[in-house]
Every structure is written in C-alpha cells, then in structure tokens.
Image 1 (tube, chains in turn brown, green):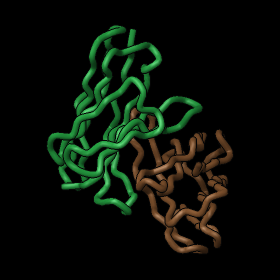
Image 2 (spheres, rainbow over the protein chains, first blue to last red):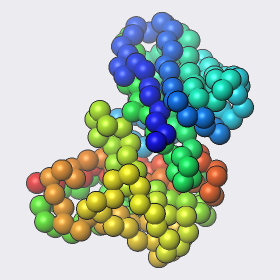
Image 3 (tube, helix red, strand yellow):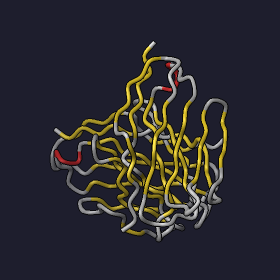
Length: 110
Length: 113
C-alpha cells in the first residue's frame, strides 16, 4: 500500500518566521504535488515536482523532491497570515488515482 | 480557467434518505474522482472514473455508488444516508490517466441527522 506521511500535523507560528513541512513515503512516486486548502474550500494545486532532486520556487515557497523520489518538503520563508491553511502532499497511485497525505494545518499569527 | 462545480455547498439530510451529489467539470477531462475529507483521516477516495460509464472503487466505496453518463458530469449517490456519512465531499478531475494533477470543486459539507 502506498502511503504518504506528513509532518508536523499542526504548526502554529508568528508572522515572519520560517517553516518546513515534510512528506515522506517508503514508496517511489513518479511525481508529487502540493496543494493548499482554505477552510470550506477545495484544495488548490501549488506545484508538481517530477525529477528526483528537483527544487521549485513559488515566491516565498520552496518545494524539493528527494533524490530517490520518496519524499518532498515545502519550505516557507517569512510566513504571512495569508499562508494559513491546510497543506497537502499527493502522489500518483498505482491505479492512476491520487494518494494524499493527511495534511499539515498551518496557522500564522500576526 | 479550470472549473469544477459541485451542486451544493451545504446539505442536511435525514438518515435513510437517498442523496445525490453532483459534480460538473468544463475542461473536457477524462478522469473524475470523489473523495471525502474528515478531520484526522485526510482525503479518502470513494470512487473514480476514467471514462463515460466507467467506474472504479476507491478505498471506501461501501454505502456509495456513482454515475457517469456524460463526460463532464460525475454523480455520487448515497443509497441510504447514515450519520457516519456526515463529512466534507470533494469532487476532482484530471486531464487523463497518468496525468495526476487534480482540480477540485469547492466541496459539499453534508450533514446527516
């Protein structure tokens, strides 16, 4: 069974701090996606990483795919209150569906 | 812009009722999915479909069925609603098999009383 484990489950920080969220698996994934979900809304895709070792930047967000394509991380620099939300990682399952981690709930306080 | 629309944001139904949740996408995507999301359990796949009239069971299909008569529409049916089906239901679509990035609807918060 392919599983994605995210850590931490909850994170509460002050505005301006840096943070890293992790997504780990014992399985190899052809790609991993990161989504952000705000309360009462559906998840929205942030990025897809495909190549082992790949690093992608989206403004203050940096995404990394592990060399073995079993793990990924999301780093946020100088967090803002607008970054508050649930961050989900997801990877392609063997049936072509998406497998999701349970998410990291981030709260950024002013 | 990519658009996945779920028919209701909030629904309240009684135990034993038959419930229909509708989802429409306007992107000509091949694949459509139904998930439920519960605190501490994350997103769990109920059913998915690769093509019209095709359906595949996900991880938790019990108590649910689906219908895909047209490419753009994927319906989730709760045959006899129960309180343990109270949840947030999310519909998603993706362009084709192997292209796994998903586009989600806004979700339906279903409460069964």
